[in-house]
Amino acid sequence: MLNNKSILITGGTGSFGKRFVRRILNQYKPKKIIVFSRDELKQFEMAKEFPVEKYSCLRYFIGDIRDQSRLRRALNGVDFVVHAAALKQVPAAEYNPFEFIKTNVIGAQNLIDACIDLGVKKVIALSTDKASNPINLYGATKLCSDKLFVAGNSYSGVNGTKFSVVRYGNVLGSRGSVIPFFLKSKKSGILPITDARMTRFWITLDQGIDLVLKAFEVNFGGGIYVPKIPSMKIIDVAHAIAPECEIKIIGIRPGEKLHECMIGEDDADYTYEYNDYYVIHPAIHNWYLDTNRINEGIKVKEGFRYSSEINEKWLKSDELLEILSLHEQKDEELVISAETNVYTQNYFTSIEDKQIFSNFENNKL
Picture 1 (tube, helix red, strand yellow):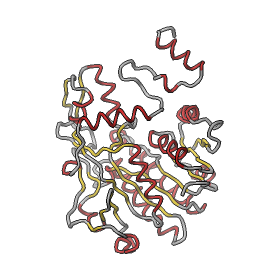
Picture 2 (cartoon, one colour; picture 1 turned 90 degrees about the vertical axis):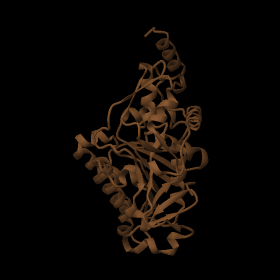
Picture 3 (cartoon, helix red, strand yellow; picture 1 turned 180 degrees about the vertical axis):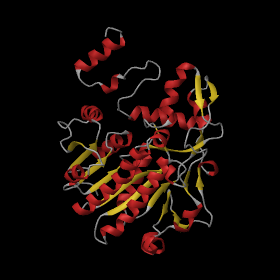
Picture 4 (cartoon, one colour; picture 1 turned 180 degrees about the horizontal axis):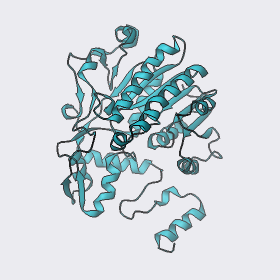
């Protein structure tokens, strides 16, 4: 599917982007992979990990999805797009709503327009559980983004660009999850928890990529794909990672939910169940009644709600630790050691870099 194709990933220097690029390089023979993001330092770091001298198909484009002219230049000749760029911090969104709207909503529209105009074949946008029944600004912007991508199929026409959405919860091992925070905080002996009852959905980066690739395989657009993944209490996550630490309850932050919901009751009429995931089929044009789209899907029951506190799947502490251990073994990203608070040597590739690391570790710098 992706062999000899050009693929662009917005926000490509993030945790998901790096793992996605690695997967594509390992499993396919793409013509071109374009890493599009606005942070030159992250681009520099990623280029050291994935040098163009070794991976000749890679291209690094500095740009912002707010800038449609730059997007259009980067999208020229592109076949497939994964849209991972977004502003994501819930408290930051409450205090900086204009900036989140510019990136998460207007940026999404910029990408949709550019992809349609330049004949991109298929676009998969990454969403979040916070887009379902949102109570915070971040979730509201991602709900708007989801609606834009679904409606993009109406603008592109039958033979035009296909747009779909993948929605999931907290990503194990990503820089934005609570786990790196807990690892860093356990040196103090105290882990802050917002509420002892709080639950969240959990997914690995590889599971997220699997769902994106599955969405690429479908020959129509418009679906919001929701994986069947386990829940876990945040306090249990803390106990698993640092059982020796004291737990301090600090209260819910602005815009934060006690539990997350990925499919609300209002979406149940349009939702169908498959083996490993659900799909919220588009309500527009009555596409949720289209038998070709539904295929082997089974309609969920009336009033169905997929929420983290009533989930049938739960992640156990030993399973969490095993996943994190496997993640550490597979991940070659730059990471911060929770114990020494220095860069791990795995990141450094050149002799000079390793010497610098050694000097730093021995307090010679």
